[in-house]
Image 1 (tube, rainbow, N blue to C red):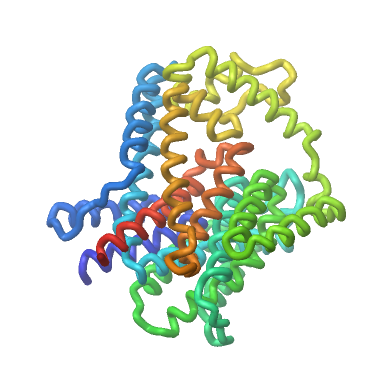
Image 2: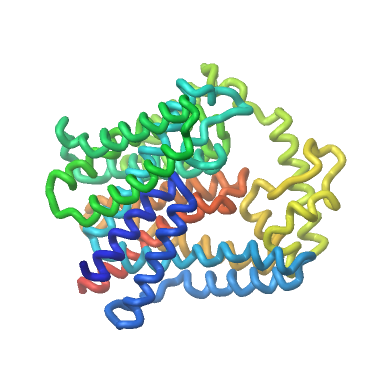
Length: 439
């Protein structure tokens, strides 16, 4: 096997395990980076330059400077290790620049998303995860991480249905997704019997191997099985997102669906708006208690944001330091706040500003702006009104959803969500690199 094919198989395994195991995805990511380093050293590939290089470098340097001036520099530098994950963007650009490989990696994301969303539904139906204080989290450690990843997977799958090849799958094409669903059913049964951990470990390992094998396969029936994935992912991910009772993810999903509607046919916005209005009027039992901004959680966010603003005003240049919000929050907490301690501020821009100061926020907004400009260009119709590629549209919708949801939740602080975002961020840049190489 060549190093290039090994790279493809490893990245497919990373993509499939992001929704089910942060340990597995980060371990496989480390192996993928090692293969990329060897390929770079032997000059069998090279990294493309992108418009994100400068803002990413500036954000990384300022993050490390902020850690130096933090209350506990060693702890702040330890938290800064998450910067290593941004290498996934460059790894993704290199692999996803090839048309066939790009689709295989994104289908691997859907493979993992199918596993996550189906387990969340089973937890809600049969395992007692049907209360606000006990929400389904699937394979992940927290329902917020699960809902954030599910939201992105839902929009990616919806884009595949709306903008991808139009052939409907045959019954035999569903063998691949049904294998995954059978494995998830076994995990749910093991959880009911009190043997969840060993079942999870075995399933994650099998899913990683399956994703790599599918990505490396040349058999047409395997490609047909990949194409069948979104037909199951869309309904299951939507169901899982509803029962997660996570309002920030709901807002993000509506935003992403609106993006898809505008790009597919603007009149579909009426459908998105009508469905949203119907939910607000009918207020089904699952949503009823969450369709409010007057609950304790919402009020606590308001006072939390006020404390965050005070943190920025107190240290506007270098901020409190990465990972320092939990330690410093009690000093800035408003008396009306419900909880005496908070690990983060439930808002991406405010979190960055509080941790890394206003220059850090400026670098973050620079990175975000450059990302969305490129994603918007790639999601536009092609020459002669040709429809945009589903990969570009799905990426734009998913990223828009994550950033809107991130106004009410520090979702980029979840490694699972961050890894998915970085992988999707690579798509529009990989499309540009692929076109340049073909020319």
